[in-house]
Image 1: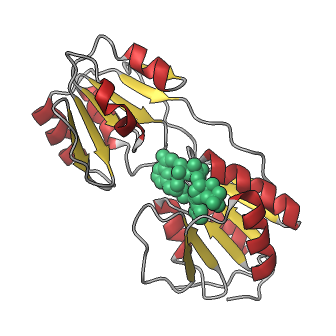
Image 2: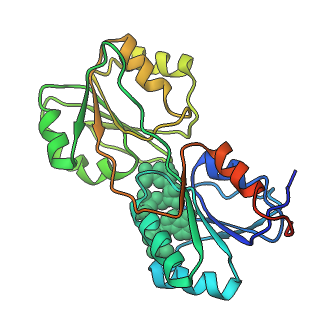
Length: 249
Ligand code: NAP
């Protein structure tokens, strides 16, 4: 059920937390998606899809549409749009609030290793034979260079044929603990590769890696810009929206 929020909002999304906020916004507000995933058809707020054309394009949009508050609830590794959001809000003279979801933390017995980027990752992977990549599309660019002796499994949103040394699983989270346990058991992965996304939707794989004593290679988080207000969870962001003086639906 949409609820009143007094400033006209542009919500930059693309993750479940953003969709949950978008579901509560009324028709005065705009929810924006890059266009890689599903576009919801059942929202009360306006939905737009596709890039703005950099920070300048986003600034133009904010001005033309009379946007009064920018919400950056994009994925923590979507660093370009977050940088554009902070810059555009500054240029347009409005506030940018962001959800900065904390990363996952290793627990007792976890063997987590942070890698800075693709080259470091490939080096760390040398001793392994059956890596499971949950990084999105980036590994697709490297399928022709899979080292002899390795068989890669990639989990992505969209189907892809793979090759003799790589299998692609097209699947969208959230992933249950039960399903993750079954997948790891069936495929005998010997290492998990992940972004440190944080949140619950894709956390079960880490628990299964722990149960099976598998190392986890985590891609380092990108730097994100400072914004007027940053929230660690969507509920506190929503609460702050409710505390704005009332007016707009
Ligand atoms: P990115 O590198 O930070 O952004 C690339 C470009 O995509 C941006 O410069 C912008 O184009 C456009 N864009 C991104 N998010 C947009 C949005 N919400 N509305 C309109 N345009 C948007 O982002 P990415 O890593 O490719 O991710 C793309 C989208 O997928 C993001 O919305 C993100 O939340 C979501 N996502 C990303 C990941 C991930 O691991 N990176 C995981 C899950 C979901 P213009 O410069 O033309 O405006």
